Length: 220
Image 1: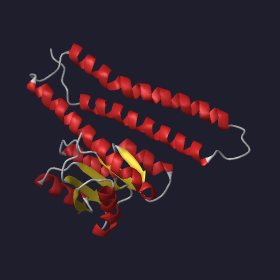
Image 2: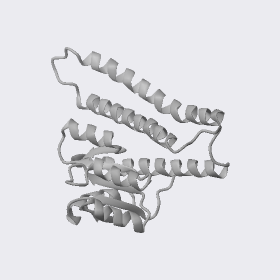
Image 3: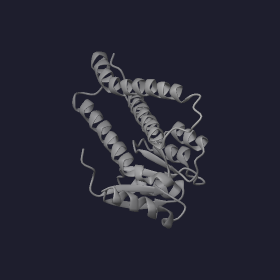
């Protein structure tokens, strides 16, 4: 789907200057961002109350407004706003914490070339979820069990197939790498990284479907 113009972006950063590289990368990727910078939950609450936003991009280590705090604000307001967390280091623990808190993606600041595609993917997914909810309301509210089962089958089959295929590929490649005296070539590492990224994207899609189910109430 086409991206909104302008793309309304909330950026959780300690200072406006810290958001400069994010905006530059979004423009380089072809987006037309209108952005506001927030440094704490109170500022975020104010901007959420006065406008509609398409995506939240946040510093994963921002004191008082890391991924868990930011997602808490969104959930309290009942908003389905995708969060993309950014990290300055390469440690695994912040990534795990961000995804566990509900971030849709987690990127390192030295890999910002992935930001544009991630924003397009998550904004599009959020728009699809909103459209699905609107169609359910127009159809008369809660779906029947048969309709829900059909929708779930459609929504889950593709990402599950991708996860299974990628995990099988990764297992085979890692088995082939065992016992090698030399490090794997750069091209192979890139392939493995792309497979992991695709697996994470598919897993996030399944999580989004599960999250959307939380707003449904079955019929009598």
